[in-house]
Length: 138
Image 1: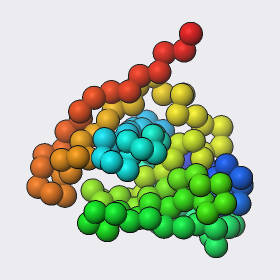
Image 2: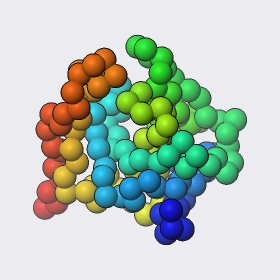
Image 3: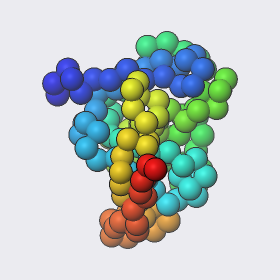
Image 4: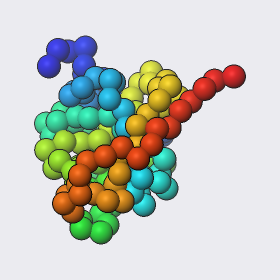
C-alpha cells in the first residue's frame, strides 16, 4: 500500500492517537443499520488487521462487544468517541471512524451506502445495501 494511504487519526480529546493504512483509501465509506451503528451514527472506512497502529493513549481505549461478541468496538474512555472496530463481517478488517481521520469529515461524502447489519452476512444472509445516506450542503 502506498504511503499516501497512511493517515493520522485521533479521538476528540486527542488522548488516543493512531495511524491508519487505508485498504481502499476513502473511496468506499459505509454505514450499517445494526443497532450499534444506528446509535453511534459514524461513517467508516476500511483498514486491514495490521493497518491500525496506536501511537499513544492505548490505555484510554475501552472495548465494547454485544450480540455474538465477535465485533470489537473501541472508544476513548475520556471523550467517548468511537475510533475503530474489528468487523464481524470480516475479522481481518477494521472499520475506522472517518471523523477521527485528520482533515476528513463524514460530511465530505455526498453519499454513503448503508449495509444491512440487521440481517448480517455472518448469519447466512446475503450482503446487501439497504439505503444511502446523502449530504447536500446549502
